[in-house]
Image 1: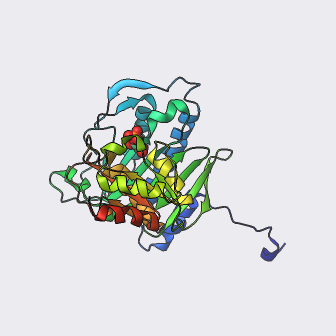
Image 2: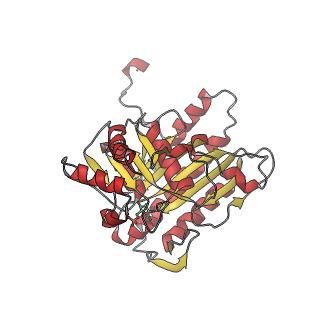
Image 3: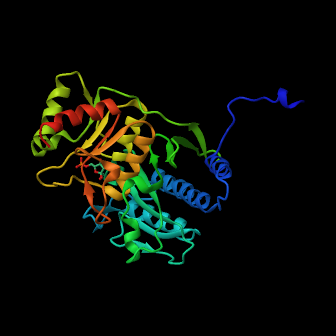
Length: 333
Ligand code: P6P
């Protein structure tokens, strides 16, 4: 049989082989970054397995304590966090780890040759787990500033400085979405072989779609501009989809279009979503797919962070739909 006679079709590409081929495209790549992404995929497989068996192994529900942001911690929040800390903590190249579940960053190494910081929300939307609703892990990777003093300030970089970002969505399938600054690629876990397989390269978000995602129960607490946008959307045939797991809402918007909003409220003037490990990584994904991401009228990725767990208002999604929101904020914030 000659090469031309091989039974070829769409070649199967795993996340690992995709990472290695990307690494080969960057002369002088040390492989450290590939090792980190391999740790992320191992974490995803472990967390996905834990979630699928959560009710059987009785690890659903709250542990009765609160995390750094004051959120009620679910048992699986702790399990997911410990999984990520274990998988990433042993990897060369990681200087700092920062998690929604830990008040302080974890300082792994201070030697000069630790080029990366990794920030993550181990299980976004975990309050939905008992109802078997999609949840996810969101991660952001930054270059470590070895001159930062104190060392923790190395983490306080704007979203534009992210080296890579992505999420693992534990839904009807386990999706791994990643960008390293050259577009967004999607992989799906094939549990029969335990590998993430490439399903879509260079994802492009639909330019427009008449759908918004917001918790309308808080409408009366939103600034007027957001309320006027909602009135406009209601009068222009928009539908509403809100899961309550940002990672799942944003993934749907990445595929089908629309806009996700978590505005400021009278109770939370900075909104609820955390900048460093929820908004920034998802904003990088959305912008790399051709969408837009704003915090009010400020481009979200340009925000200079002041604190690791700080919150931010969020508007992100299809460019046309984000523009419709911004038009209604223009006359009043
Ligand atoms: P609300 C989950 O706790 C989360 O941080 C996001 O994933 C989600 O979009 C939001 O909170 C839901 O918040 O106030 O609508 O319940």
